[in-house]
Amino acid sequence: MKKIKSDQPNYFEMVYAVVREIPRGRVTNYGAIADFLALGSSRMVGWALFRGTPDPPVPAQRVVNRKGELSGRNHFPMPTMMQEMLEAEGVEVENDKVVRFKELFWHPSELGENWGIGYWEIGCPITNSPITNNQISLAQSLE
Image (cartoon, rainbow, N blue to C red; front, side, top):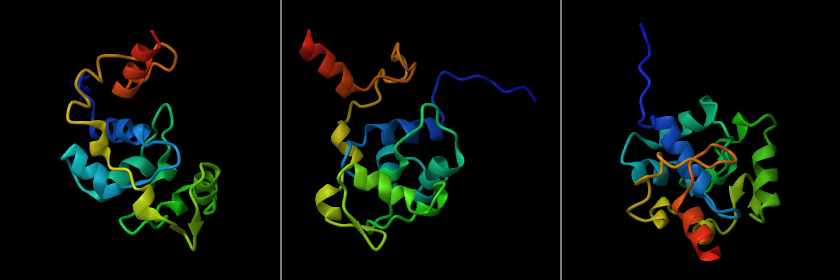
């Protein structure tokens, strides 16, 4: 059977796009991403992050479970790698759980209701990845 190429992003690509927007030093959870995309479930988001092969890579360490636990840690090359990556961003972790989780929690709704409009048509000339609305705003402010 011949695969049909679509201009529309698939579920994995949409998950990756949202995860790439999570600010450094902040975390979100699988359910928040699923709710924001209004597709699938938190398990599907986890599946996309740990079974897919995003190019360029995504900061999957910033996605934790609803309690702030590093439930995806065993999907990294070393079980401690997720914690180490978060700590390098200034996120404190104790007993495989994000300290001050509620304070550091970022919800994708912060991207705004128009996020995604035109997102897939514009590509970054350097990485060939989609340019975000935040990047467009930044570029316009520098002009």
